[in-house]
Image (cartoon, rainbow, N blue to C red; front, side):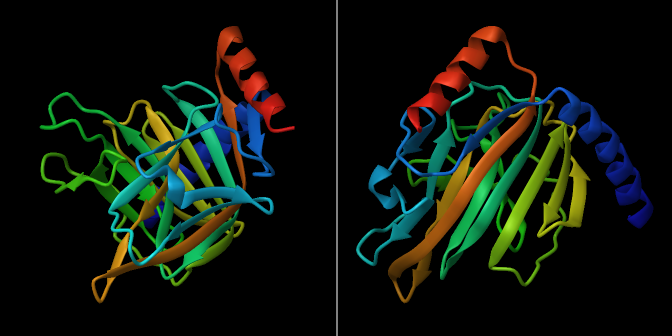
Length: 232
């Protein structure tokens, strides 16, 4: 396993050098609301942008399962990219960043997501509107590892043609490959509700978000530039 991860790591270092040489970069400091760049799917009232942060809070009277704050500034699908999120985590909550794809052979409309929480990676099926379904129809490939990190100074996620590489606080964390993920259709933050004594609570935040390395068309580039201008 160590040898396999080392090979993947070396492969990603090579790919990252290629991507960074001609990378398209989109960045959000969360200094202002930007509806052209993000779409709250489901309960949009739990998501707030203030004080330079994306903030999400679930109060006791709000019963939720999985809520999605989807990235829309650059249309998918996404085949090569690097995601960097600074000051990322939460208090008494499950807050992560997800990458998703629809599969025609999976019953129902819910896409399959890998969710990158600060302390683990989990496979999930949800629609972003509070509904989720068991994961029974496709074998997930994420490592079954947990880290004692509820918050991160920085999380960096690399994706290239089914390969995932994760760094946390500047250190290599893990790598894995899912051959079914030749592309990503959905990117976004996800809030997972936690039921504590039948009361739903949770606060979480992210300071900045950057996506780079994308191969995009001139039309898509104009869309991205417009989204950047909207937040200035």
